[in-house]
Length: 381
Image (cartoon, rainbow, N blue to C red):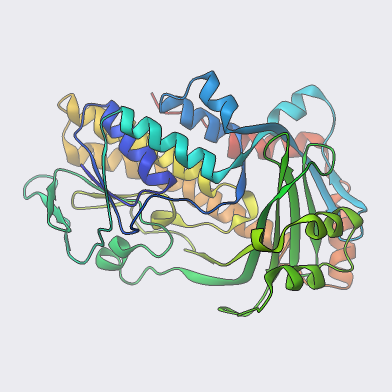
């Protein structure tokens, strides 16, 4: 197998395939392996996926800080939707605050231990998808029984095989930073305002992750990202202003947010299987991008790698992958869009007041059901 892309999805897929007995090479266009230095909330389904990849208790504990989703507040710090302290509800929204670099390094270690070869500085300029019942696939000069397209939101493999499906700009850009120190009460806290969202979450005993997701024209250039974030959130609640002020200016990153509405019409073509953002790039408003990438990567091994190694027809295995993963990922994509519409993408004025009043009436049982639908996933048998 050849995996295109050595990010979270690609390394997860490579490890899963290698554990199923495949010889695996990963092609990465960057000159060296790296991951953007920001955080994410690792939900229960993501933990289930990494355990399926062979992570033990020590690996999982080493990823970050045990926490939970505490709820949502308005820009002035008034509660909109707070999560009940009932233990069962808290378990349903349990998280690990993870520094993405730490996860990426652990995935690299597991891939190496499984015998995966990683080739850096290799771009995909030519691709033949092959035929699962005949001709092998070919990518960047490598022939393969299976190609895994894990090359992200702006996938070169997707551009070759599904040129009409392209990532679109969401209208929003996101500041992110890891700040020295502990802020807040140790939980994931989110704040909603007109066309904006802010979140904070610990990723260790000594560092806190924050993001500021705001409406902004695509490819906006700012001379000072820290100063711009400070100004944008100057009227927001004190916890928001405090953590921005405590952040070293050089630690502030920003990227335009793209997504692939609806995802691909099919997650396989020929001998190629698409995973992660290459298949279904979501908006970040459900926090399921990295989690679904881990799920996808594990499932490449469980649904394709292991059955084919045991003698199952490749066509049948690829069909099963598509039938199991595409409906779930489309549902997560729709949920992310819905969350954006009622949350960070909502305009100002009466819309904010009405939304906040309605959200305050939402019972904990509804939160628990929604959490279970997204985060209650377990690996397929």
